[in-house]
Structure formats: C-alpha cells, structure tokens
Length: 308
Image (tube, rainbow, N blue to C red):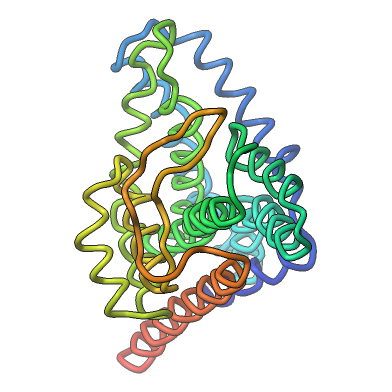
C-alpha cells in the first residue's frame, strides 16, 4: 500500500497540481502568525512550545485518523494516504519555475530567466550570466525535489500511516517561516524550529544524496559529497548540491551576483559550466533517483511479503 500510495499521489500531482498557496501555505501562514503573536517573546523555550503545538498534534491526529479508517476498510486508509501525500508533496508548485527558466535560457531570453529566478529564490539577479542562472536553478531544483518529494516520502515510510509526511511538511514550514528570521525583534523564537528540522532532515537528505549518486556518476558524486559538503553553511542543502553536481558532472556553487553584490560561495560538484543542457539533465537525474527509491521500497515490501 505504501508504494502504491506514493505512485498514485505523484501521478495525480503531475496531472492536476495542487494549489499549494491557497490550500496549504495560506492556512499555515495564518496559524504561524497567530502563534507568533501569542508566544513570541524572543525566547527559545517559547519557540519550542509553539513548534510542539503545531507539529505534534498534526502528526498524531493524522496517524489516528489513518488507523480509524483502516479499521473501517483498507481502501479508505489508502485513499487517505493518497490525499495526505498530495497535500504534503507539492513539487509542481516549484518545478514550473525551473521549467520556465530552462525554456527562457533555451530561447536566449536571459532577462526573463533572471526575473523568474528572482521570483523563485528571492533577490535580484540582474547581473547574473546565463551560466549563473542555470547553476542557481539546478541547485534550487535539487533541494526542492528533496524537500517536496524525497523527504516527505521517506518519513511517510518510516512513521505509521501518513503521519510522518505531515510531520516533515509542518517541520519544514516552521523552519522556513521562523528559523530563517534574523531580526532582533523576532529573537531566538525560531531557533528550535531550525534545529528540529535539521535533525528530522538528517537521514532523508543523506538518502536523497545517495539516490542522486546511484542515478548519476556515482564516484564523482560521492567524492564531491565527502570533500565539498563541509564547506557549505547549510549542511542539508550542501550534501544535496554537492552530490547532485558530482552526479551530473556540473560545477555548482561558486560566486554569484545577487541584488547588486557578489556573494562568494565555495565550488560544489565538478565538471562543466552549468547551462540549459545540464538543466535538462537535472530533470532526468531527479526522476532516475526517484525510481531508485521506489525500486528499493518495492524490494523491501517483497522481502516482507515473502518472509510473512
């Protein structure tokens, strides 16, 4: 049931993408603002309490609903799995930016590609070269694929029912919404959300990086992962970008032009300069990595069925 739930949810998303902003992000933002107003005094322990009030009940209630539906009939539980996965994945919400940037670079419309990249990542990239735009789009796509598909899928497999998928999605949202804020007024309220998601994402990020390695140039991917990931401040993103760049044979990271400034970054991956062709290769790498994960999940399920 687990594998089929994942496959059906992904197929539905490809055919009918979910309006993530309206159905998922808008309610979460409203809840986040309410909790910040009520609990935020700049202290870590209040941030921990607010995080627990969102993530723990959400995870537990979904797990309970799954078991109640299973008691009624397994078909109801299966449909519930698919519905929750459709709500928690949402890769198409971001992938259209990648597709449009890829098309703009193919057509030589560099200004449009820069504008789309700014909408996707934030910031302005008016001075970015076409290689920089492709490089940044590939980095963003590798991380987005992990956080919208691979990470959700892994926790869906680990925890009973779809509770793990909900936990991962909620933890990721709070890490983005609270954990990234650096203003003095917000204080340390988001520190726990940032640390909690880093812990929750520790294993999924490494399994996704391993999938990228198997689906591409394995030796280069592992080498880049081992030697380059330590240089990047965000460790989760680092191993995804380093292994993805090595698997694709493309140079990522490196200095970029953002909002009128040059931001220095270490080199990740290895090989050629990024271009539109490498963007096309990124799509193939992500789908191959997903097939690797599904194949392994099918083997585990088959082994359990045979032993049973």
